[in-house]
Each structure stands twice: as structure tokens, then as C-alpha cells.
Length: 192
Image (cartoon, rainbow, N blue to C red):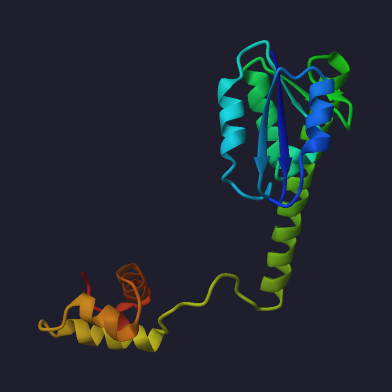
């Protein structure tokens, strides 16, 4: 069965162009969605993917109608391939039911992997450069070392609870516990 999926980004947009192309391509059933591709909530796509069976083909008008990103697109098509479901994109003339189409899509997968590797390398290089300039990475602590010392002193009083200390410093219990763990015995911390 040839199944189509059409999507536009806003309710004001129209899927007519996509629907006409999908019908002309022989789609027997078409799932239509109006909403941003960046949204994780795409119920019609979920329904469409759920009904696909081995031997079926999912057809879209253009690649960007299916995936939010190249990585997302490669993931969806790889899952289709694992289920023995073909994939066609009409505008880009990609058809994974043919050898040439599979090759093109595997090239896309390689490009997505290459892009991820480049991002990781740039991130590592940026962090190393920042460390070389004396900057530490990561988020600032919500509780300073002084706050942690005060909290430890408050905790020494058996009448004061951790919940009260959290409320006083406007932090969560995990944040308080993490701050207390940063203290060394010479800071006056309590061992729990």
C-alpha cells in the first residue's frame, strides 16, 4: 500500500498542493497534519507510522514535511527500513525502494553523522579554549559556599529541618544536598 503524509506549519496554510501530488503519485491513503514540524506532537504522523506494514511505502511531497531535522529524518526512515517499509519523497526524487534511492538516503545518513561529529568536535574545542583562558564551564551554583556553610550551621540545630532550610534559601532539597556535599570537613560541614 502506498500511504501519503502531508503537513503544513500553520492552520492558515493549505495542504492542497501536497495532497494533489500525493494522489497523483498513487497514494491510497493520506494522513494530513497542520502544525509545526518542530513540534514533537504530531498525532497524524504517529497514526500514519503505526499502520505501515512490510511492503508498504510512505510517500511525502518534500523531505522537510516529514522530519524536524536531518537527524530526525534519518531516524524515521531508518525505522521504516527496519520494518521493511519503503520511503519516497516526490520533490527530491528519493525512493528507498530502489537501489539508487537507498544509496542517496545512506549518504544523507552519513552527512547527518558527520554533522553530529563536527558539532561535538567544535564543542570540545570551545570548552578546551575556555579552560585554557581560565574559565570553568557549567552552570553557576544556586547556593554559594557561604550559603552552604550557613545551611550546615542551621542543620546543626535539631529543631531546624531541611525543608525549612530549603525554604529559607529558596532552593530544592537536591540543590541543598549538593551544596552541602561541596563542603569539606574544614569548612565546618556535617557528615550525614
